[in-house]
Length: 217
Image (cartoon, rainbow, N blue to C red; front, side):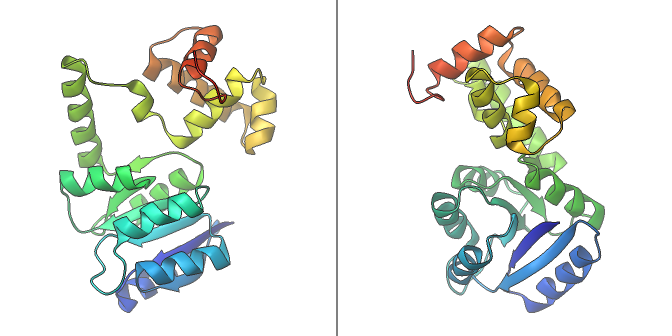
């Protein structure tokens, strides 16, 4: 069961989300908050798996500030930003604050469910237009020699990379992270594709270079 905390200043929005999510067999809304400060306190108390965080809350702490503070205090919680703004500036600021993803409030219910499932599994989620803009930004930086592929790895991919570098086999990684061996293999394949590597030793060397084992090359 995925435990979810709703942080939104509109009670009607929270009510609708609660009805939708509690109707899903894998999800349970365990708490609600109307602004960022209250959301932080509820997160400490309830330790949800996922927080649905409204971006704009005029009274109290806003969604970006709350997200940044929560990721410092409770880094294991995945935060999915809810926003009405299909705007590049808000997207990059949300990612910089530590959000696992962003979804538009106008998105279909099925897309919201899929987004929650994705971030609860340690993956990132962005709505299609946001993904397109991020890829354009990445490719633009690559042309200028500024892109670091490490920046586009999801939190789960970084965890898998770290455990690979520590010498764990796929089965051991699966047990450590509570996922299937097949999912580990998928993450490993994604890592190799994003980092443009073909062998496990290359991944280990890269992890060392990035200091993922506490020391670098």
